[in-house]
Length: 82
Image (tube, rainbow, N blue to C red; front, side, top):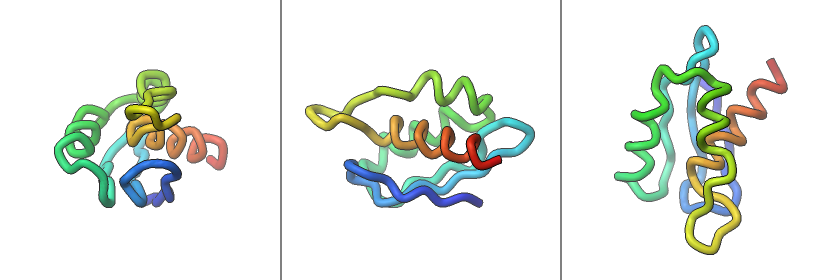
């Protein structure tokens, strides 16, 4: 399980795993419960590259980032280190 400390959003961290190039086991610590659960379920089993492509750049209100964008950053960071 990987843990990513978020920046600029309500959620404090995101835990996730990657198996055979697919996103799995996403859990947000904090944040808007319904939205973060929805994002986690939608990306379950999704190809890492596709998840990054779909979520990168999403903003939350006037914030320059969002929980989905932070997940994309977490996955990108994971890819760079593996």
